[in-house]
Image (cartoon, rainbow, N blue to C red; front, top):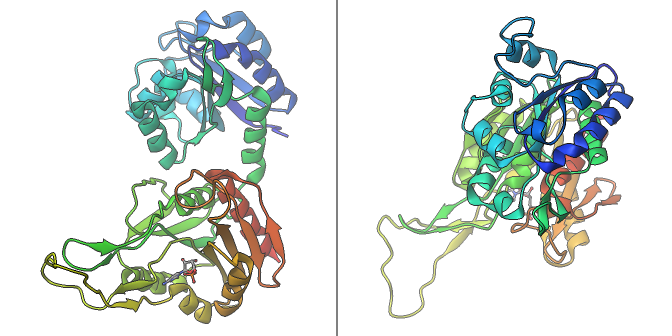
Length: 400
Ligand code: C5P
């Protein structure tokens, strides 16, 4: 139910606006109060009369509307709403929001709105996949904005591809999931590691791996949304996160990650070690660039500290520790050994043998194995959804 929730729908100019009247009715059926903001272009696709009749509220579509109670409607509206949903969202509104432009009702409201924003894009496949739109989406996502990825199918321009606005029932489902999720991690302190580490060989080269850091960053975002204070220790990654309750600390090497982890571990309730820490580092880091040799060269590698194992030894009864395992063979047995040897509450296993899982994908397929060796197998899903599954499992285990 969405009882008592105040939802603002911002509509932009896209043919998918024809689905919004159905969305309004579904939200009201779930008990929500709905107010609508429409750009001028949106009103080419859906009428003021329809929107006002269904939402039972006055439509806000003109910054300088003389009928408004007072002239700062975008501020009072921003205070009123619990959630702002932009649907359908054009490339234009996404670009304006990502760049802080406020030149009409909706873009002005977006900047004034400080609570949860959802965006359901609708546009031609080429536009959606264009580098500026993708860059803007990534930037907004890293700042806690949730996107409802457009579906694949027939587009109004006559082509078939990604770009159809998500169906109203799926949008309602996502809002229900968000609202019902609540603040179940309120004031919990959570330590998360993410990304790879880099171990230098000389001033020019280093050893690393393909980890993007996405899983760890997604979990940090979800934990913060659910009320936690997160310390995110990140190796070198190409991701950003700008949420007030996420404290990001950047590190480069396994040794640096260990130092920061040890400093913070005792102050946290839950620790999630999603980083792909290098297992080996060069015994000596050459001060000068190693010159090209006529034949083979050898570099002596020594083990890095196993941070997770060390934390497992320090873990108190009131603390929870979660590890990750990426395996290519004998997956279950290897993962079970790690749960036991590293004193974990559970381990998140992904196998490179599963199609669509691992480093190079935006999707992942995981199995969670707890300390009693019971298994939960999950389907292949986008990493943002996998992160929700892991956080849900943490909450269920932490409460026991
Ligand atoms: O033993 P393995 O490296 O496969 O274990 C993976 C888990 O251990 C991950 O949670 C990773 O963050 C952690 N790890 C660590 N220190 C290392 C290597 C891995 O904490 N040196």
